Image 1 (spheres, rainbow, N blue to C red):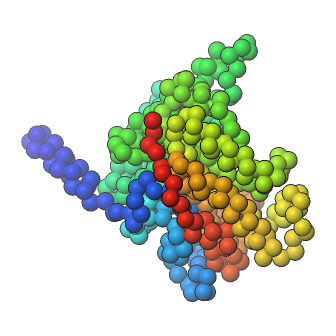
Image 2: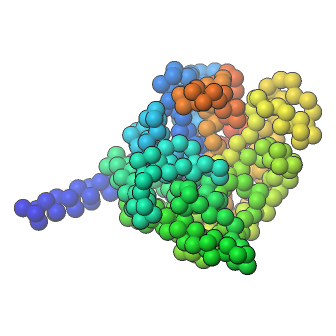
Length: 390
């Protein structure tokens, strides 16, 4: 009886692996994508979307017809509202895959946003030992990916952590810039061992679920080279197939860097990372200004902004400049716009008790149509070769 059960499980697995939804663009080709993790909640709130002719339609369909070939979806362990938890992510991933879109899954390993300033251990894991955290990363990754497999979705990429230049699952997996000559060098070294093992737990789990999946480790600020981060990852046994970067060039003004300089440095860094670490580079997040936060543009020496069209025009100039810089870089794997479908001041449920306003760097117009910058990205022509990990 046990043998029969085992055979049935094997046959079921074989059947599942042959029943995936197939993307309309080849695996490994340049990704022109969008992180649309809020979309299901926006639709629940009756937000409407329109194409450039003003016809109402499905948001994914509108962007796909404009050239989008991939989506990115974040997954939280157990967020209080339920959005971006496993069930929501699987539903959205299946919907995208059925439309022929390629899928990236972005594991935050948290109950809320993980970024360079926040890497909070999920509530259910907060009492875990380090060994238990490694196992939790493995089990959570397998749970989500096998559920996707059962739904007929075969992700092309998976992120093990989101914007982790300072590690993840703090304080256990927190890291800092290596400093072997300083008194605390050994402690920093031990921290990197812990973080690298956590990422390896996610990497190995992803490969167990899908042997040919591309695993990404992701950091912010594409205009910061951070060779030390990747050197430390390699030195401490970190596993990754692709380097993921975020790029918000119009936000760089707060650091005293113009968007022109941010784009120039990002191009230089992408080339250097590919050449030095022999991994493809994905722009896992990009964002421009389309309304609100006009003071940022003024700080960058742009003329005073009085109308939406002016902000949108500048955003398109910035996007065009960046895409022209990376268009000829072999092994630059693609670009994902972060939550472009946001418009009209909409905000997710979790923002309301926090007193936060709506995200103002989306890339739909106030009329709910794709902006010029988004259309420029999705309409981009690219023939670069994407090399495998060496």
